[in-house]
Image 1 (cartoon, rainbow over the protein chains, first blue to last red):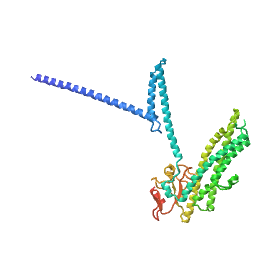
Image 2: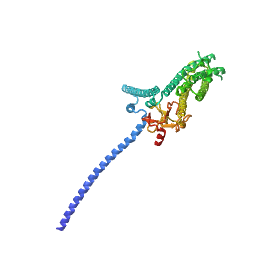
Image 3: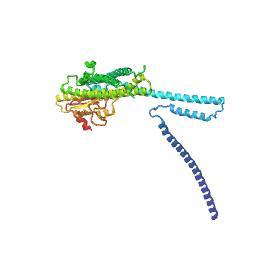
Image 4: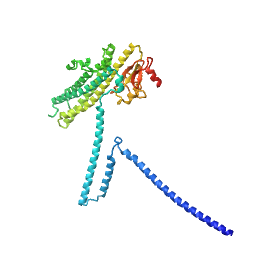
Length: 191
Length: 254
């Protein structure tokens, strides 16, 4: 009787042990899969982060708005792909049409690039012109703190310098004419 | 290999020198050194450094000391223009002569447009330097006259060493050096100095003493006196109290 009880107990414990091993195995598998997924996501993020700074460094820091460059690189990729798909010249009409299309695409890309360059240059030139033509204005504090005499002498200074530079241009023309006359007299100039 | 004849070179140098004499006359006025250089320099120009000096003095007849200061300012300005004149005339002569020599070697005659191009390139440099001289000298003249006027007025009021400050004329365009020297940390209140501590020579970037000659060539900051009892409210000159000393008040904050 006692032996039978021990046997039952043993079988019961054995079943429990197998169940526990199954559960542990299943849990372990699930956990392992989850961890693998997390690792994959992390690796993908790291790769993206590594690529981003290099892309940022390639961009012109002076042009925050440069939508042309990503489009341009994408266009480049497509053109390259098309070119790689081209077979060696077999003289077919299809081949020549494809070649012409790729050539047109390249021209179009160059035009876009030129247009964007012009746009950037125009912006820079406008900014320079704006700074050069900035009128001479007294600040609020200066106009209140400064005496009338001081204000007049400042205006006078502005006028003297601008008049002097204007007359320098005129005098420069006179000097050039005079030098040309001298060279003509020495018969060194053509015509 | 010969280029322009020596008399031709002299003539070219003279054309350039005449140009600078005319400019010196326009900036400095009818000074003795220029008076006999051209028959057209008989009268005084409408505005010159002397006019700025007198205007900055408060539009009064200058005394013998002030006249002497003006004379020395005009002399030093003339020196700068003279050195630029000699440098430019030599450069122009040399570059035109080189062009002629090169054309002779290649057996070709040059045209006037090419000569004009060479002269223009040299003049471009001269123009930038002339502007620099004009700006620096006008600023120096103006602030020297202010300093003399302040010194005269303060001695009349029995003030040994008057309080002065610099007015930043263009707030939006003031350079960092001017802001550092002329403003308090709040960026609104002008910094007060004793007139004796203001440098009368050219300023070097990084120095802690402001200069009456301006902190840089295109500096527009103007030297001004702050009378006893007066101070600043939001950057504006205002009367504080009869015993107020803005210099002491600012130094106690530092």
